Image (cartoon, rainbow, N blue to C red; front, side):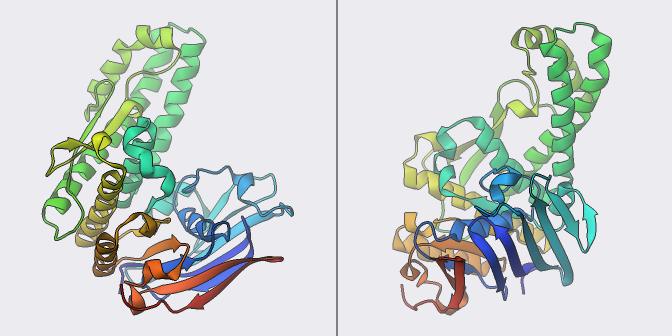
Amino acid sequence: MAGLQLTSLKLSHFRSHKRAEMAFDGRPVAFIGPNGAGKTNLIEAISLLSPGRGLRRAVTDDLARRPERLGWKVQAGLTRLGLPHEIETGAEAGESRVVRIDGKATTQVALAAVAPIVWLVPAMDRLWIEAAEGRRRFLDRMVMSFAPEHAAATVDYEKAMRARNRLLKDGVRDAHWYSAIERLMADSGAQITANRLALIDRLRAAQLGADTAFPAAALELGGEGPQPTDPAALAAALADSRPRDLLAGRSLVGPHRADLLAHWRAKETAAADCSTGEQKALLISLVLANGRALAQDRGVAPILLLDEVSAHLDPPRRAALYDEITAMAGQTFMTGTEDALFSGLGTRAQAFVVEEGAGGSAITETALPTGT
């Protein structure tokens, strides 16, 4: 039995799904159907059970089914270490998103302590060669699975940084205006960096000790400017950077300038210089290492959301992926256009066929073919 298990999912007017209701038994889940049927919408709904804007980073109004635009709702039942929880999130038309855990209204940040969720989507295939912002989001998503308080630290840091940036844009030079804000940035920013470094150390250990078909990545926290874990050091760096920041009109020092750097350890090749397939393999290696490490340390592997991941793997590596996600005793949700992509799972997984109909999507549970 998985330490964390999504047991049910109910959608109302979410994306292409007017109504949808599914029950899960803890095995990996494959959503199968043609492009445009609404498979990714299902795992996007699951991603909203964690803090943030989900795997598509959509604004709230865009999640409502068209043309009705009546608002949307996602309801989920889950168990964590044997304790049941109910999560509900959604928004009325034109309103902000709300979250309830076990019937009580709360913040999105509170979701991090209940359901760690990590995902890979096709848009991340170029993660190693595009801007550092995407790599920071990927890293922070894994950090939150180990340190739920990381979500609150990130919110506090960004709020303080926005206040500081307003002063910089207005050309304010009085040091007294900056000192209190920079102390807030330094306290939360140092915690963010410490959390990131701790996660990187844990991933290194999880990869080196693993029996896996996926490559180990040598990881480090890089980026522009210093990344201290001491609040006093970060506060001093922010103060020293004020003249330069005033010219730029924004903060140029802090964890928002960090970057996740990776090398294919065995080849000693930077991730950015690897082939497309090798870059994807490195990403998969990291999410699997995250899952193994969390299961070992906390007894709770994160929920993994893998959008169209099987189509980009050759049969041996696809089979290896299925073996690893089932051995991890976590819960993984995948999408694919045909059931043959999941034949290596057989009875080890649940499967649902997703089809588009005149009145909305239709979701039917099915059995996967056996064989490879």
